[in-house]
Image (cartoon, rainbow, N blue to C red):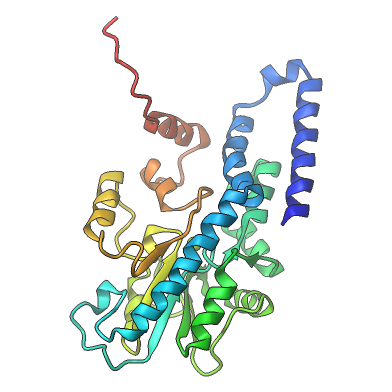
Length: 292
Ligand SMILES: [Mg+2]
């Protein structure tokens, strides 16, 4: 990751110098150029900061500690879908999201910054089919530790079913445990009722397992109905205050997520300027409002 980070820095500096050398072109640069740099700090934080690696390792180390407590307590479940069920005798499992929870796709984000491109499903699938995503720090040790305790590791991802093959190969090549007898990689659209909301897939796992922990980088990895406004999302977090840091472990992802969608009212079809205007409007400055 360091080599990649250094290479990226060199390219970024080179682009910066070239822009300065062009002088007048700085003023004439299209508005869209400014938009492409918006994710620059987020991607660099993930790829180069010691703090990001410390944060993900911290999350996974904590998850492993909670695993033993969860395993020992037959009344423990991490699923709201399991709240009133009789699950005590079911075999234990954990549920992890894939992207930015166990696999690091920041190289694809870096390409978007450098190429001044927004997300498209087509370019995303090109990246997925490269099968080159590397583990999020701490994820490999945690999933292996869970598997070694006889806990089934489920991956519930919004990668679509058409890219399940490359996703499975990528996970396997990096050493992530994949159950030989049971399908533990549950992709979007794999079953007719498995949409972007992961609730139906959580229920599928809950039908045969006691779920000890959930890990993800997105509110939707834990609870349903997250494509709502910021106040409602906040209310979802507060309504599950007892879960965080115990049964639910959140990984940091400053690059993208439903938090980003909420800022634009989930209107992904808006043009860049409209999205940017909404985001600027969401900034809190605590400046005094003048009547003048
Ligand atoms: Mg994710």
